Image (tube, rainbow, N blue to C red; front, side, top):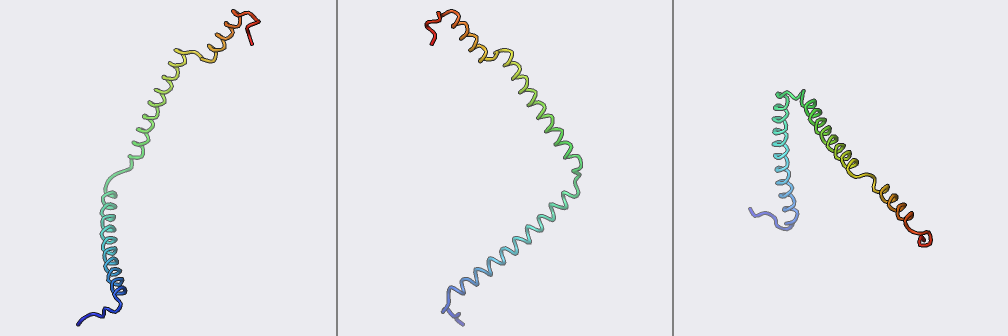
Length: 104
């Protein structure tokens, strides 16, 4: 028996809705089964000390980075004194060497 083609859009909408619904149902069923398998695997493993391990590793990394930054800053401070102080000192020396009439 031939289908009634008088409303093709309605038939197309129904068939696509039905196919998409079946696909999404199967997909959610598969993802929930995968989630259950992952939950079972994680429950079997021991993760009690992972938080402490990560905390210690991040702390050591932060300590090393801060130590490098502090040592770099102290080396630069000792190597180069304050540039503003040098600027004002050189300006003061020039003022003492020049006569007062040339200063503006």
